[in-house]
Length: 271
Image (cartoon, rainbow, N blue to C red; front, top):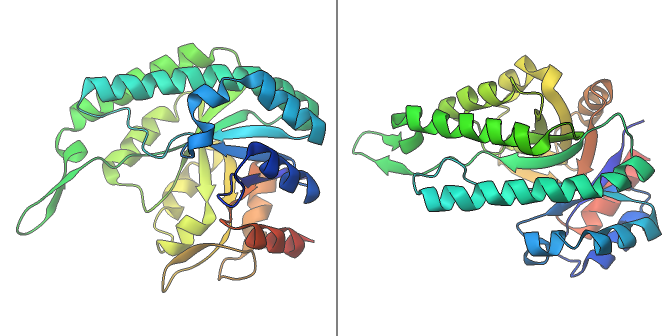
């Protein structure tokens, strides 16, 4: 059976409101989003409060790292801050593991979801030049350091950092992801709505690494005009085909709508 959860929703102002909604819909977990001010690291590190609140509802948490996370920034002060954020978030996840063990599936690692930061580009008269592509040696060196640090920080804990597709992986990003996926502490998230809205440009890459898929963001989408984060059934995606793949991979699934109404509709659609 697939474990379904919900994202952090902006209509809910508190953790308790998110937990109440999660419990009322019969979902198993909440993906705490570190883009929200109320889920910054200092708040997440109050793990006793997080655990107490979740235990009352019988749920657990996964974590979505800040979308701005950039471990390859050319400014080492910026890179250092993001690396320290990841390190401390891993420590949070270790303490939250007790919830996964009590209310989740112990065969599924606890996940920290991350985006790939494209970096900046320079616009020339005839093209755009991505700085990470131009300075690839520096870029991949940063990812080598990141991988080694994450392996050390995670150690033997059942935690994985899962890389999510967004608006299409750049070629230099694919090379970095290939490198990360050689490590046991990294995996992939397939966001099926993002995938649809970008013309499924990442599907071949994801399929090539299907054995690394352990997390899904499930929402409906439309290719033209591009739309995603729709309630299930409101778009063009073959949801059941994606769910069959998720089940075959023993992957956890976030019903990643953006509104309470769409989340409720998606739960009803699943039946």
